[in-house]
Length: 432
Image (cartoon, rainbow, N blue to C red; front, side, top):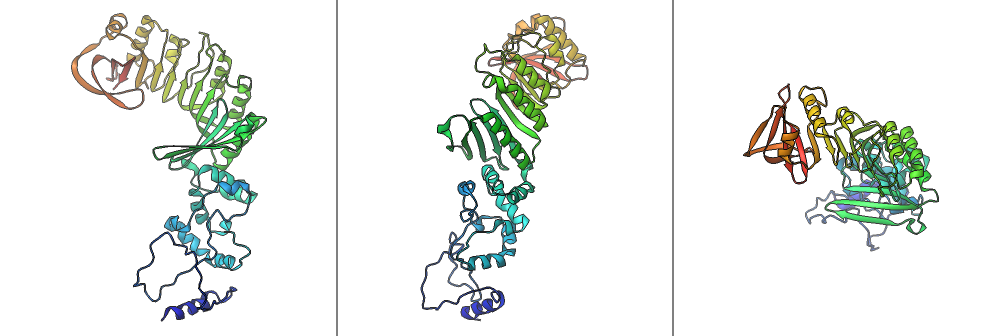
């Protein structure tokens, strides 16, 4: 069968109910072939091969005439989709051919694709493109919410000079952040940075009330991506001190828990104790608490979260002996603590007897001299001084390992060993 006969056979069997026009072979035209990005077929192409040429050319996003929200969406050629998605797209080719035959309407009907094909299209979008797509109409919002691949996405919230919402996709290569600002000059600006293969994209939006608009966008993003847990809450407590309580109340109402909570303040003279206590008493923290706050009140009444993987208190003067006994985190860092040698002696005796923090894997303190610690704290606790020539690999505070020389060992009643050693500017107790 010749190519000409094959074309007319296809015309009869496929296009029988679709308006078409047979163009005279004498008419020469330059057309865009849908697979123009791949090498041309070899000269030995099978005579029964058939090429579908789409005119005018189209892409998934650039031809969608829906709103300004879609302007940022990138073109996504069909042939860059995974095979499964291409297979689903092919099922809708009949309606697409009808669409292309109407020169006055060349929009690509994404919502007419099968569900799996739509899902593959959205997987190729970055998080901000997904949000923009969902905002086009009620139908696109419904479709977007029904996607099944959001479980690997993470959402983080930032309260500092601006109010930010950061979304990371499945491969963590692109991080998109919305930032609410009261600076009109920043409205609509996009900043992009790249580190190695990872891209960070920041979109600024002006608002007269950035706190309220941030809350509304938070609710929308959490709804679209079906999230009840925030990956990271980053908060400068004296940035918007008068709004902290309302922000914490908002989080308590709309977020089930926070995986990592990082707290800071710009001026150590600002009193943030009330807000810190309110946050600890109202927000559930799952894994990590990182604090560089300056708490001056020894009787601070905030609850230290239980069952954390890591707790880091940068200015821990307020952590006394009783609070030390309450901590049950695996990794504990207490910088500049004021716990006495006698209290450390009592703590270690309780640890040996398995009466406190049996979860402890690593404890880091501000630098102490090892021999001084031995003389003042371990004087009545059985211990072993390990020769400096002995090398051992022990776990550190970052859940990594490092090689240390020597050290001092104590043993718990269940056989676990804790080794004390100094490294750089820290004094460490590693349990193994």
